[in-house]
Length: 107
Image 1 (cartoon, rainbow, N blue to C red):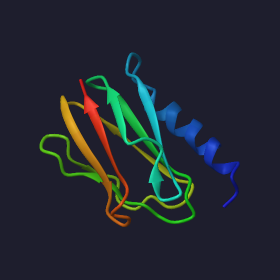
Image 2: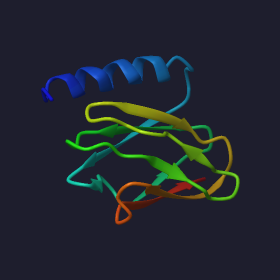
Image 3: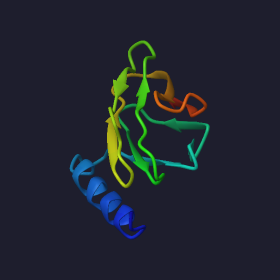
């Protein structure tokens, strides 16, 4: 997939997600079957955008109590956003690639 498409898609996602003024957005990328970070601290009500820069699909999810989400199948070049409306720690994983793991600490 054309590498120019992903930054354009990211910009569009951030515009849509950023419609709620005052909320911060953080971006996590998937590349090389790894998340761009292993741990992230965000504030309550912040949004995290997950972008797939890999050549393979990912299924990003968290089953942490109170912080559950499932972005389903993120195809190469696509992305999805999650707004964290509860404080705690989200253990984030990829259902397809079990070595992909990260923590999101919501303060």
